[in-house]
Image 1: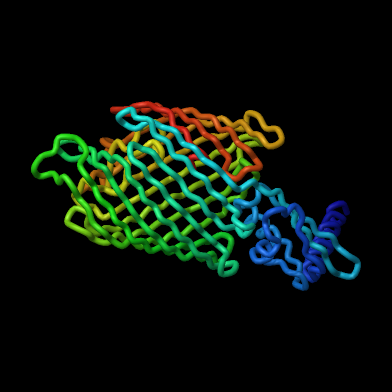
Image 2: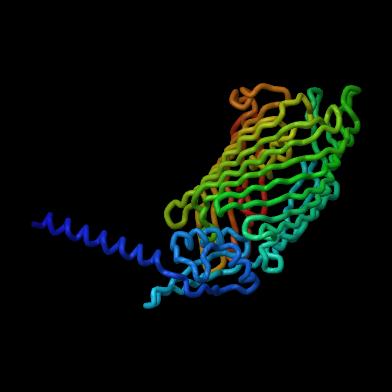
Amino acid sequence: MCFFIKRISLVLFFVFFTTDVVSQNDLTVNSLSFTGLKKTKPELVEKLINIEEGGKLDSLQIQNDIIRLKRLPAFSNATYEVNYSESGKADVVYAFDENFTIIPGLNIFTTNNGEFAFRASLFEFNLLGENMLFGGYYLRDIFNSYGVFWEAPNIFGRKFGLGLNHVNSVTQEPVFFSTGTINYRYRNNSFEVSLLFQPNFNNRFELGVSYVDEAYDFVDGDLLNVIPKTVEGDKLQYRLEYEFNNVNLEYQNLSGIKSNLNFRIVGESNELLNSFLIARNDFTYYKRIGERGNWASRFRLAIATNGDTPFAPFAVDNNLNIRGVGNTIDRGTAATILNTEYRHTLFEKNWFVLQSNTFIDAGSWRNPGGDLNELFDGNNLRVYPGLGVRFIHKRIFNAVFRLDYGYGITDNGTNGIVFGVGQYF
């Protein structure tokens, strides 16, 4: 008898539950309203979400809308509430916590020859309340560089956007020859136009075309007759980027996966700066560990045309892939990089978060003209464990100030401090 009663109870629960779901799916959205919007225009939110007045109520679609809205620089958090009426209609309210989105930045570091260098920037990530990015940076790294960027992801509606940027980068770059290392003054002057396409909240495509004027001018080193003193040329570059994003954000905590594929075709300008293909994919995984922990890992696989040239496209560098390794210690035509770290919230109150970081960065690369097995034979392997700290402002977009110390445990290991804005990945 007891078993029979349990079976009847289960059937009744199933009937009532499915009936409730069906009735909710049959509800009509009577009104749609937003609270917490100060700078962001309501028209932008209406453009991005899939729920609309007069349409059917879909709770799953609302949850997807919330995930997408929380990814925008404009918002630190977003929630929703549905109020049901007896007439078979529903009032939907989206509530927002807006970010402060005019963000200055300052990175300070030293070059390989011990000189002081810095990068100052100012970006607006929600220009005119329309989710547009506009800003630029100035870099003093022995020489002067600057960049200006504008991006409007929703200028042509929910799915299509446009981007423009101009970068005039002049830096001192070590180039590695068999006879030794030579320092060049590297100039890269580029203009790019890109088309943005986001068919849904998980997938995004970007197609860019840029004109690049670049040159390498000799600065110092053991310059032999076979090594050029100046190399320069103009070229066109085509870039295709695809991102799959299924990451859910709760302020400083993330969970889910993200994959970013970047494919570039660079045209030929001369025998040293010849045409080549570049493909790079970053796979990132985030997992919450309890209430205060966050495990994050990134695996990068990059490969390019394997020309026997010292001007290889991939650099092994502190600020790019391996913390503590130094500034541009080597170059390659293929690379595998693994960054994994555990972030733990030590203190959180109101807008402020103090977070510790324990990490391991490891990577290997293929020398220009070499074989792919160089990625796995251990000769170019670098492993750098380390510790760091994060100072986070929860109400300012990307206001994560990080300080990391990496220590090399493989052959020719070094150590060093890396400071930056934003999480490392």
